[in-house]
Length: 135
Image (tube, rainbow, N blue to C red):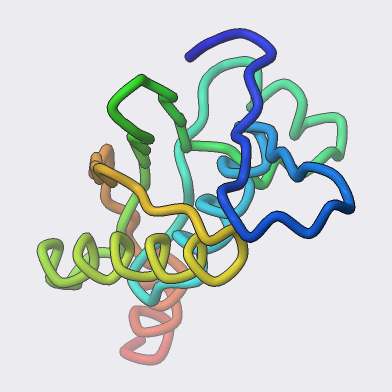
């Protein structure tokens, strides 16, 4: 990703000035859109985001990487899914929700939205309750 690069909006010239969007804004929008999809348990960040979250700050761009290239925008999303869901359906839903949300909020079209499933989360609380009820 280019350092300190901003996305310039292509829209009608209103003579009021220009609109630029920072790549971090795209990361946040994509992260929130991905988290909204049923079956996504959590987003996977790196060590630094884990440390920041321990201090109470929520990073909505966690698990999202935006690459600005000359040929367009590529988004990589790293997420953990809930056990038992259809991974292809969840991944397709994440891609569509991110695409639609970014289009609605920014009017940007995205070249690629790559989904990386990096883990599966088991619902241990439900399993514990079920075991307790059987006893």
